[in-house]
Image (cartoon, rainbow, N blue to C red; front, side, top):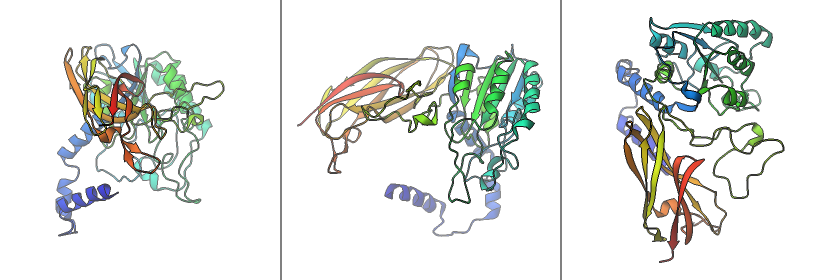
Length: 413
């Protein structure tokens, strides 16, 4: 808590708010949403996009082959910023971003497909108490129009998910916010299925504020991008990724469950804490830390030195990461640790470090993590932070589900 407060106070001191708490509106007008800030927003959006699936290399789109794109979906034409946001003064929707990127060489058509909610859209909707979902009957002609548009295109980009009306706080009985389901609201699943069944290669872009149980999409759609709320440069960032001007390298910061019945869904469960349900899969739809790239990476030469340390000692674990594909890209190397035997039950793995690196095709880089007492410690039965002697699994890989392991022996010295 003290550290969190200190960070806020530091920014206020740096801004001079304690000397002069009043803003200069003229300076703010020149400073807010300047070109540098727009570029930073775009960079952040590029880094945040997660490629969940890319079957048969559908992405990036090939300009030599793709001459028409159908942009479809209830989130395609609006900019969604999430709650606690305000008008940024500049915003690019996915539709606008693709239209700008396509230029005069690629035809772009649009169909809404269906409604998530009616009324005000975008960040303003978060502040409106009443939420009205779309009328399913009125969506029937919208879906039919989307199918027609998709049939005439080389590729369909379907933008679905949630919005500020369906993902927000519920702070009283009169002001309801949270849903009791992680399924796509309304007829969005039907819309995606109808587009897939046209046979047109389909990309789904998710714009949402929480994980979604997208079982049909995960199984049947060849390419899926998770965008969350990408900010004011949403459309520019998505278009850059779709056409390969930016290679996505983001990783999931949360587990995607298959249903609400899997909740709570997380990677760091206790050894005996996860039991399955009848006629279902216990594995998540997408695990914590998952994220693909337009290139491929190989991990090798996982080494730990020394392999034995005292309870206050330090070891170094290293791994070689090679870009084995034909395109430069980012990889987020992840470090997890497990205390095999302890006085208090510990998780099967815990994220203890990560490092994002950029590699050219064929390039290899050695990534090293320091294994220090703070990474091995935990609160014991007396709520004291301790490092107990014993064996620790040191795991390094590309996600919580893809890890190589070496053993570290901690001894009493």
